[in-house]
Length: 350
View 1 (tube, rainbow, N blue to C red):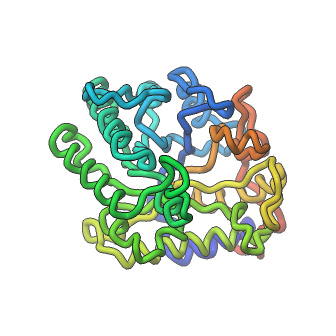
View 2: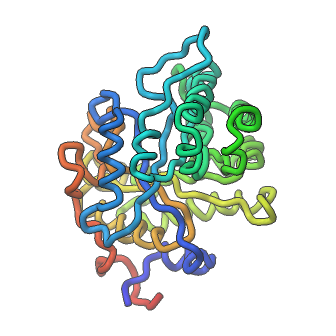
């Protein structure tokens, strides 16, 4: 027996709990928290540690979600058809880590071409040792959200609209058909927030994708009563809205389009956002009341984040990382799911 949270109740009623377990992993940025580039040795250390996280009850965090296919600091060269692939690929091969490939889609068509070139280069360099580990490909991350927020017109390389993302997905499918046949059956999706997925103008992306990536952070929802106690309800409400959009779209192989939880977490340090307070205690609460239930479902889940990589956030004192780069073997808080805090919900057997 343990205490059932709002997340567990909702997921149980959707029959997700009890099916074949989903893949578990973390998000990995291309840079360190100080903005320096990550290399092979960094990713190797991170991927190895993710599989043996202290206090994580032996959970198999054997998957890695990447934001870009390009090695950090690689620039677009119009005279070349090659772009250096991220060193995370080689580290994944050497640690047998599943890869959710990310293609950055908010930097314009030239840089997206570079993303495709790096994907081709990875196949040419590593062959099926690489493609066998690919569990899916994400074309972009929160591009629709940033575009809807009006940022695309103010800053270079921020956001993209539905037409652009649909075109990029088509470009990727064409490339795979012509040049990377082992990726032909890998599902292609897009990652965004529920606030973007529910917009009618983004319906074409929903149809073009094989799966929808769901990013959700109650911590940032300062327009709501986003206390840590309300965070599980806010999370499941957002997830349900994304799943409703997926269910309304055309099916994939006769099944409802899948929703993958691609980012969620709570910071253990940083400024308050509305009623949300960043603290070790609250980060632990969110892990146990949201994460521990998600980890038991058939959903693919990528927690945010094992080691901080957003330099802007860190400069502002906001830290989501479960571990610190100085010692990736020591989690910031207890990651055990074997006993949940009393405040997580009513007592129920599941």
